[in-house]
Image (cartoon, rainbow, N blue to C red; front, top):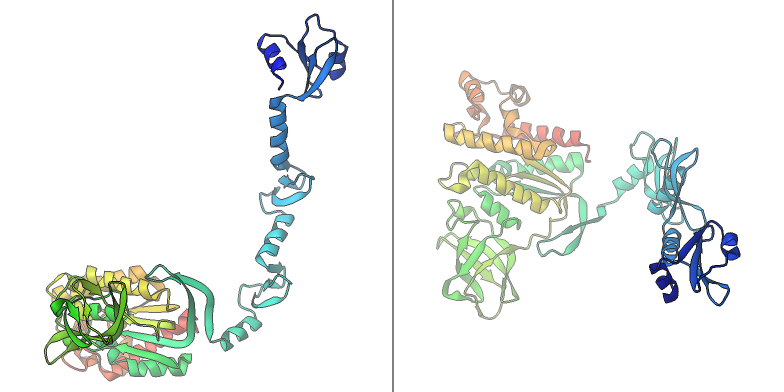
Length: 460
């Protein structure tokens, strides 16, 4: 706005007129004077016996700019509102009289997401050229026959899924169909051969890792698969080529009752920015843990280091069956509590979940001679498993305590067996020893129950 007009306005010499014609017909007594025509919103300056057009006021100019930039909202008999562009054309933003998406909005979303739908044709996904992808749904929400055929012949699943690894790096998931892991201690160790046969014959799993190891605690199992890495420290503060004796820290424990059950694990440690590959194991002759270094030179290593398992061969499995922690029950430390077993199982589950597409967590059972304290821990663990994992929880213990197990196994229970079931302890007639492990007939029945469990999931 010219300074002269601003000064006139400040001195009270500004006059408004309804129309520009009225303004131009008026002859002020004072010069200079200023006036505004409300119909055109223009400000005029009277000077040298004439009116001079100075254009819109600064306020009106600002309003005009805002109106030009803000989309227009319009309503009609069909729509509550529609946002239009500068040319008055309807955009995809709007709501019909029911508050739902407009036809224009639905069409735009379908185009952007590359899918289309028809009243009777279900849902189909297309590329940018309208060519159909393999994925299509029937009107009732089920997969089309074409989609089912594609899934059944494609070994690589979920190729567009991603996850963050322990180094916070984005990795692509390639879960491999027909590849499975069995992970646990002696309960699964005694079942895994026949369980693998069932997975192969009934679900076409052809590559199965039998990871049940008799005697292992949950700390060893978690370390083996990289979920809870063991921390190691080298004797003499150095790593020499070959075997090195080490002290260990298994999530706070420096000794393990089950140390002799440790299976050798290939992995690495990071020392001063250097990756040192080797094998973590237990020397049963010296009764010490070891790290066998693959490095050809001696390395200074005075600190404590996390051993990272190189578990890659089966990390892309499509199915994981997990039953870990029974050997922890009743240990005279924090790691023998239900809280620790639950927490460690969850850490394994979360570690493996981005890798394995389907995970089954199986319950534990109490031995025939378990005391009340041990029985309570097992029951507390199972109750938490059921709450935590829901439909992924396979309640093996409930099956062993049911009347159904007798008809399935063909075993006739005696009075003591029935009493043990009532107590929640394993009946001796179902056991292979003094009541710590299931016999072959019972294992076979549990495997068939697991088969039924998997079938009901509809995964395969």
